[in-house]
Image 1 (cartoon, helix red, strand yellow):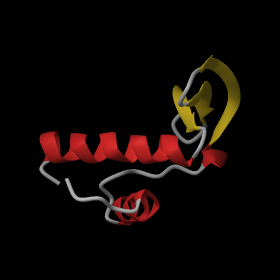
Image 2: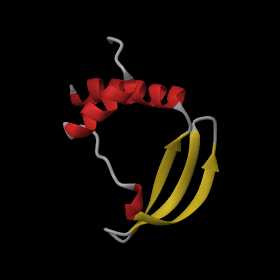
Image 3: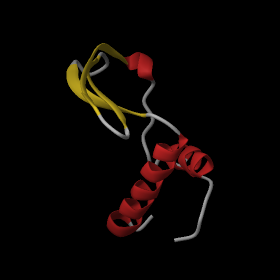
Image 4: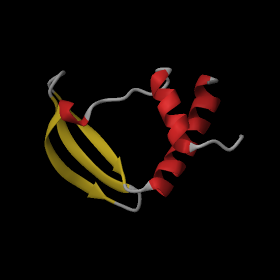
Length: 81
């Protein structure tokens, strides 16, 4: 798999709708339910749909790069994107 700039790849994937982007403001009632090496997981209410969801925040650029690598591999394997 060729090397790419993770930030550019992520922005391009959002624009092409291969990855969905949600504004953080759409969610309320945040409660931390887990912390780890990659970041923080919160439960939150998704106002638009009235459902409880899990939100994961990635803690730094290195974690984002690893996340992008895993997402790219998943999309390549399972979605042929």
